[in-house]
Amino acid sequence: MKVIVGSQNPVKVRAVQTAFEKMFPEMTFTFEGCAAASGVSDQPMGMEETLQGALNRAEDCRRAYPDADYFCGLESGIIEESDGSMATTAWVVVMNREGYVGKGMSSLHYIPPQVAALVQQGHELGTADDAVFKQQNSKQGGGNIGILTKGVYTRTDKMVEATYCALVAYRNPDLYLK
Image (spheres, rainbow, N blue to C red):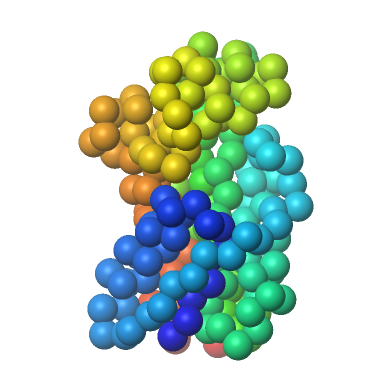
C-alpha cells in the first residue's frame, strides 16, 4: 500500500509511518513525502483554518498521486484564547483513494508567553521557538512541546497521536466506512 504524506518534513513523514505501521502491523506500506499546498496561512490560527490546511494537503496529494492508496494531510495550528494565551495542536486527515476522510487531532498544550508574543506579531511558531529558545529549525526536530518537555514528548509524538485518531475509521471499517 502506498501512502503519500502531504509534507517533506521528516517529522511528519516519520509520524505517519509510525502510526500506520502500528495500527496495521499485518500490512506493508511505502511512504513518500509530497510538497502539498495547505491553502491556508503559514501559521494557521484556530481550529477551522488548521483543519482546512490538513484537508487541503490530503486532497493535493490525492490529485498529484491518484494511484496511491492513502493521502495524509498534517497541519499544526495555534488556538488563541480571549485572554491572549495561546495553545498549539495538530490536525491529521487521512483520505483513501475513494475519497473517504478520517480526521484526528493531537493533544493541545499552551505555549509560553514569550513565544506567544512573537506569534501574535506574525511569526510562525517554529520561528518563534527558534528565537526564544536559541534553536535552529526546531519544527523539524522536537518542536515546541519537545523543547518544553526536554524531549520526553515531541512534535512527532503529537503527529503520531493525531494520525492514530485519523486511522480509527480505517481500523474499524465496519463501523465507519459503510
